[in-house]
Length: 348
Image 1 (spheres, one colour):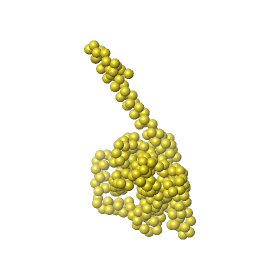
Image 2: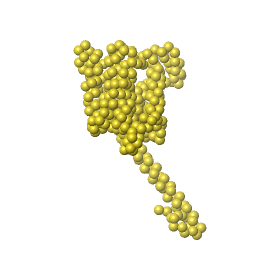
Image 3: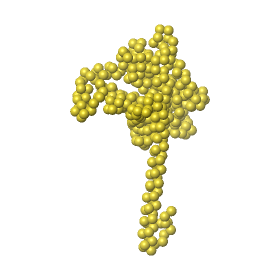
């Protein structure tokens, strides 16, 4: 069980980067961007193709981020300059990226025909290189011995991957926090809150939307590039439902940890992605459920995350009203016993 949870945490951290991108588009910009399902695969396809062609994994990952940024910018251009509905802009870009991703992965074949998947079993990746460095430090054996003393079995082969992912997602979180507090970031947040207001201050809302969507999809593509290197493959269908996973992570995190500040919200999104993957991993261990039920489980989790906070808040509000009513009754009876008859003290 510990090994399964460990794997879920690793995947959750990777998906957390994608969830931060979804948070920027859906929460900050208030833009229903469905490009995510395509740009996630774009990041994976670009990284896998570049690695197969012999480029360094860091270079491949950086290029994936750039292509993801451009894909988001195109979605923004379709909406702002082409005057296409926001939802339709994302759908059109997602459809276009499907064919582009096939072409990108087809660059690894001799005839350059579209290719649906690329295996990365015997190739170098960021994680392989970091594992070699991590293993040379001898930390894995020390940590595993510690857990063995506690009676924990089925330990992972290396802790280096988790450490690298944790550092990466924390760095991305700090970058997002910093970006949203810059002048451009504040303008993007204002655009999502009230486009007319920020436009009245002579801000170019079209440019802000384009930059915001570009940054969002750059994070999504970065997540896809890391996932391809982690899972050792890139597939044309791996992006299906990514927008739902991102939204589930955002909703779960906000419901549990709140969203009072940017720093707290980005932490909540990361935690939400990890919790989501752990819940999915444990749910699939139930005997009557299989991998085909994952979308249903996701839908149930999102529904619960949306309904439960409202139900809890209503109960709290009723409790507060009942408490205030009881206090007024006590005050009224105490004044009545003292001979006072003040109308304002009567309970509602």
